[in-house]
Length: 487
Image: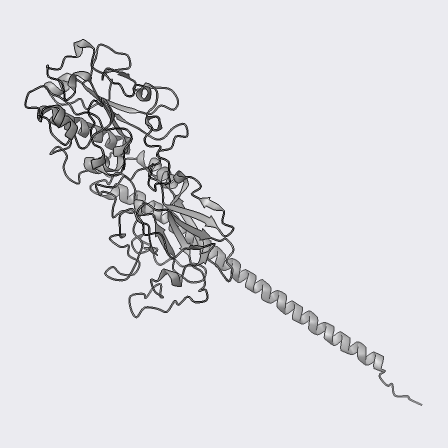
């Protein structure tokens, strides 16, 4: 007799448990796969963002170097383009022709078109944004009130989400530019496209619709005050409340690029050293012109300007000072004119430098590196003809047989950890006022050379890199200044 098996309640419960367990496994696997997909997507987006930021930074540096050697009149140093701040009158991706007020930081989109690139997108498909320190933009590089060289500090302080300073703990470490990947829109941000002109990046030019706030720092609103420090905040791990990622360019990175490129000739076969030599020859020629203009035929030269100035950027702050034999190369020589009884010129460069020439550009941007000593026999208050036999002229390298009416000194790169910080902003300590920040050896310790009879050096050991040009009395009286450095 065949008996039918009846499933017991216990057996049915076991089947249910197996089914439920299988469902849980499938659901878990789905979650894992979903998480892996999301993680993979995040990694892909992050990789694209990192690559976009790195590409933008490298291109900005490369473009700065290229333009510094392409221009017919070399600007004297590298500069960075203005941001793309609107589509009028310049097309999308083009750098503004002006960055607004001088020395004030400005913000906009990365000017990819001006950099010779297609649009650069972050991992979320947004075009990059760009913040530029006001003292590093190319629209102001050859303004009379600029000073743009490898000692010019940036104006951007970069912090992380933990409020730690990443760039800018010291004035010389501040960033000069920042490129920002904005990421996804945050609550309250509207990225509605303009009606026209944004075919590539879309959206709009309102920075607050793209950049975020953290720790009281709003990345969308850099300071509009001249020479002020702007704080920016970045994260390496985008979150729902903050997702701005920043890469920045430091003063030293631009200086390193300049130093590397400066050793190679430009399209005319001339290096940076050649151009500094040309600047010093031009200055010597202006001193010769100044001496020739002395109606009494005494070939007198101007007093020097003080080492410490109110504003090292402004040419007219380089005023000569009575009885100052050794100091900065003067621009205004009003004191010399007074001390000469009104016979000497009131400006050193009056009529001797072609406007917007390479020499003028280099003087504007490197004027804080130029120093000057006038011999006692050639000062503005002298009445007898110059006579170096009385021991009141200058010498070099201990050679008393060759005496000079003036010596021009150019301070090369900083050595021994020196800083050359200007007091802009006012919270920064002025280290430009220290001659030892610029010159080495007896060239620094001779100061103030009250009699104008010091002995200066043209060579030295490790850590010496001063460049000197010497002008003799005969150079002033009989011919043109020598075109070589001091022997």
